[in-house]
Amino acid sequence: MKRERIKVNVTPYEVRGNVTEEDYQCLIRQFGIWPLNKELLDRIKRNVGELHFMLRRGVFFAHRDLNWLLDEYEKGNEFFLYTGRAPSGETHIGHLVPWVLCKWLQDKFDAELWFQFPDEEKFMFKPELTFEEVQKHTYENMLDVIALGFDPKKTHFLIDTRHANLMYKEACKVAKKITFSTVKAVFGFTNETNIGSIFYTAMQSVPCFLPSILKKKNIPCLIPLGVDQDPHFRITRDILPKLGYYKPAILHAKFLSGLKSYGSKMSTSDPDSTIWTTDSPEQVRNKIMKHAFSGGRGSIAEHRKLGGNPDIDVSFQWLYYFFEPDDKKLAEIREDYKSGKLLTSELKAYLIDRINAFLKEHQRKREAAREQTDKFIFKG
Ligand code: TRP
Image (cartoon, rainbow, N blue to C red; front, side, top):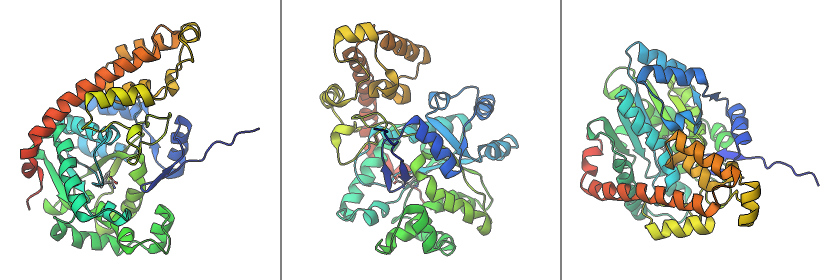
């Protein structure tokens, strides 16, 4: 029987199907985004002296207007960074991918970061979610952002309901230029979608130009994000020039694979598919050992003889995307796994150590962040 490739559907509100390497190439065409090619990477490197491993390895794989952004930067027109997190639950490792790159970009380009916590977004989209729960998640999610080491003097948290006085008027200017048929087409909304959801994309566009308003001059904006968020900014980019602002530039990340199968999306409703930033060492060990999909062989003898397949092995992918920044070490692991010298259990043990070392530090900084949220929340 001929197997049809599952067509992926990627929007901010649904990622359907496993996303493979080939699908990311399809998304580039489907979304009209640009591959992050060697020339651009070299240009980043020329400016800051090195490349983050997530850039080197194609974890960030596409962009919009990065050439323009670097033109401006090289002319002395500095940019700010913008990203965000809709608080709807705990933070998992996958959420951290764009934030880790933001931290690197902040350091390398000495850039401000505007971080949005749209605390109304998931309230609108998830029937069961209350504002009380969202408030708790907002605070907890902030701790994860702060724990990554952002500079409080250059980092500003915007919380939609709290900063409504600053944001709502600007959102209205954007909303006035978006039709219902546009959001239906872009997000797959229907006549049954609640009207709060329909408006939301206008709120997500505001941080793209709010700093320009506050500083009374146009400032270029760069948004590192998971590729599922691109549709929001496709709309924003059409509108901002009409309001007299720059279009934001964007850097698109692939998804960190869920544990259970290669290319699956981590699911908040299935705790076994992911690692939370608050997981204990035992929880990490159990989940990786039990659930991380393996590209190894059925028996040790067979594995030794034929070797494993790192390209579909979730443990290897997690090292590649996040937990093994050292290219040489990673190449070694890859070769040893392919040759059969390294067993799945050994690969998993290595990953578990790396995750637990990361989480130990992260959880320490996360606790220290409890007293610091006030320094990050924008006052103005
Ligand atoms: N909509 C995003 C989410 O669901 C949150 C978000 C707000 C965001 N502003 C952003 C994500 C800018 C990336 C870039 O989590």
